[in-house]
Image 1 (cartoon, chains in turn green, purple):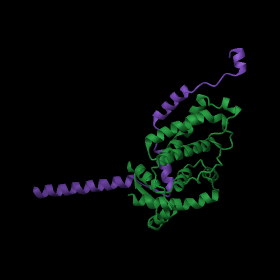
Image 2 (image 1 turned 120 degrees about the horizontal axis):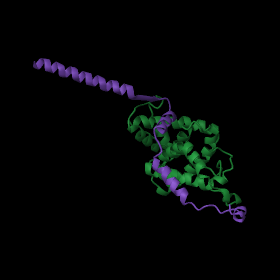
Image 3 (image 1 turned 45 degrees about the horizontal axis):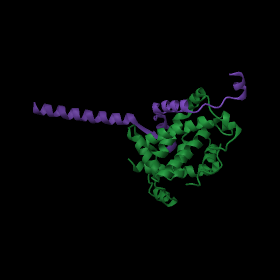
Length: 194
Length: 76
């Protein structure tokens, strides 16, 4: 998984020291606006990557505080949202690596799931219950980190395949190709979780 | 009388079962894809308000950027 996020970020998360650093902070009203517009997708990504609401709250706080400190170094080569996603992904991956609490699935694991996925092509049907979030989390946890991240990013309609490719270090064509497998694996896991 | 009560109970049970079934039908949701389901889930998952409050406190505690030479000279 370490290869998933390459060192070609949309914007460097922690660039080197520069004269811009002095004017690197956001005005609080600007931070309010950015928080208002982007906090929900950032929190959701953190929640589903970490699988823990309390840790997701901490991560969301840390991501926006980092953005507040570093905005002067944001050069506008990407959208603010993509830049925030970059910070979030790196932050969560660092936490996960520290925790060592996730089981990393290999490609073989994925193949097993796909072979077992008799109903993977059928629509995902669910009763509107509180368990939906738990089932989604359980299904995402069963995926490889790459598939999980791809699905979470594609669910944000504001991100293009190109941006997702840049965030995950691959071409947009590769994203499209892997998405098909990711969807199938998710559907199989979700239908088994009922 | 007993027979009547029994029939009434049976009728009530059938009605209750129908209501449950009807409720389930009303609340069943179908998603065409994983990302559609995730999108729905995200829309139902608000950020806890405590995060914004905590962020505001953290920003207030951040050191102020140093004043420029111009500001220092003219006291602005």
